Length: 314
Image 1 (spheres, one colour):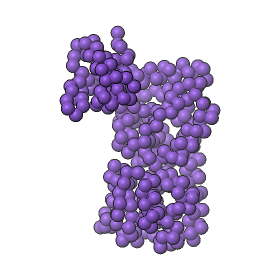
Image 2 (tube, rainbow, N blue to C red):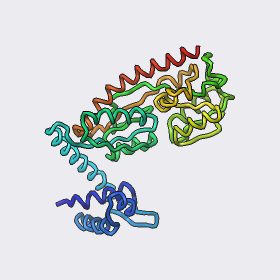
Image 3 (cartoon, one colour):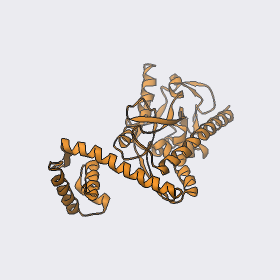
Image 4 (spheres, one colour):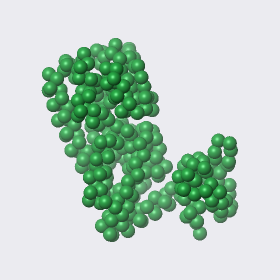
């Protein structure tokens, strides 16, 4: 009979590729994890991992077991959720992986609102780059993912989307922030800051400039949006981000959207995605329904805010 404690320990080691890191995450001694791994290898009569100086490496059998155990624990989560559903969603957990641009204030606000009705539902949120969000879904580390620029994926299903055009944002006193109509060619010589190449925005901006035979006049790249915004404000540079990624600063009047017309930037979306083979636990299913309704409201609110801001610049 499968030892669930050993299975849980093994799965954490497989995900982190380190016994020490798994021990820290699980709040147990590394020796306890090693004992459970030995039991599991004895039970299956096969070597599941190889130890080396940099951590551990899964064998082919270990890789196979990891995939199956992830599905086992997902099934257990669903069972727990269905049981809690019988009690009116009085307990449960929702695990989310999301890109930074939608994490706050949108996601944070809506988690808080949802928990007003379901205070015993706990949330675990991982904020990652786009590829890491997809990886977290594929590896059963989360139930729901939020990403920009989703493409067809054999393992994932799109549940809803929210239009989020890419904006060129700058301080209100920037020379180009007076409401005049702009084309991307007008921004070629203008200094800007960009998310690094772990973000789709980086590649989208470079592709759009490349069509003009140019490159963006980038003075800084970074992997954290609010740092980029603060630097753009400090240096009076342009920053390329969707509205939700800079909503707090836009609402505070620190930065404003330039009146840029660029078709390459217009049709971008935030996507809510799940695994195709996954049966969502009731808590996650309830939150997904709730958040998709907020997608619709958010798209309308964004359009109204952008129209108001650009009207004020005219």
